[in-house]
Length: 82
Image (cartoon, rainbow, N blue to C red; front, side, top):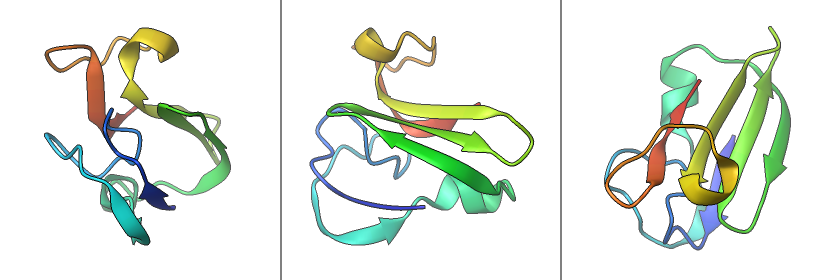
């Protein structure tokens, strides 16, 4: 999975404390590091979710709207979590 654009709420998924904007696509390394095979991607304005080949769900971005329970400080998580 590659993401780019606004990362102000962690929605790009490029690691802890990484809330930067990207003009060009970059690989979401955490998914590759875990050996995750992604089947479906769903991108919202402030969050992202993927479904894996084993039916798992990984999410990141603005925690207030996604309600997934992986929070850093103000509720946002730039680190993909199952």
